[in-house]
Length: 248
Image 1 (cartoon, rainbow, N blue to C red):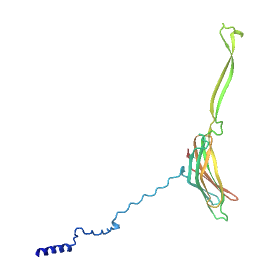
Image 2: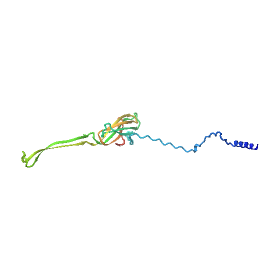
Image 3: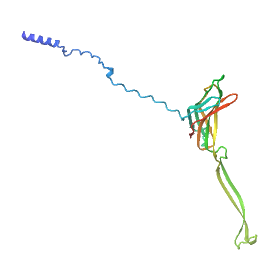
Image 4: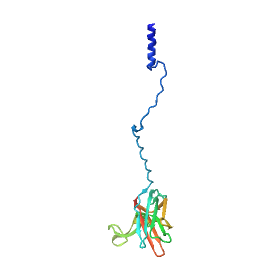
């Protein structure tokens, strides 16, 4: 009886202490709470990459500005210019062809008037050629041929109907060559548009426009230009702008 009482007391002590008997179900896991202020900061995402510049992108020169005697200020410039050389349609080595583009803007500020300012905005391109072959004879063949009569003196043993042994003779010459007609370089002016405007903010946009020259040997150069004019009944004011010269 004493041994049985000790065994029952031992089992009751184990249950009271919270011990889990073998084979009992495991307790459910409790969620872990983390203090956000103590967590390390997340790495900042890398900045977005800028899109690549368009093919043939060209930096524009600063705007050109002029002041008129009647108090007006004319400003002319460009942005987003492109000038890309391409194979010419003629496939000739003496031809140059480009795809060009850009936005050309003008600005007119001055004393108030009853009517807005008006005038023209012209945009175009200049192509310089180091050696010009278009206004010359180009490549041509040259040749000469002729007959030269002569009289010669031969030995005395030869019986000649001519006095003192003189005999006539004929000689000929034939020559040939190639000539290339070249002239100093020239500048080709290629106007694209001439816009008549009314207002204080005229602009012209050129996109995927092709310009070309023929008969050019050696290096060539290209640049854009723009002319802004303001017209009144008594005057004309003109400001000219020229872009960066690009060598090709």
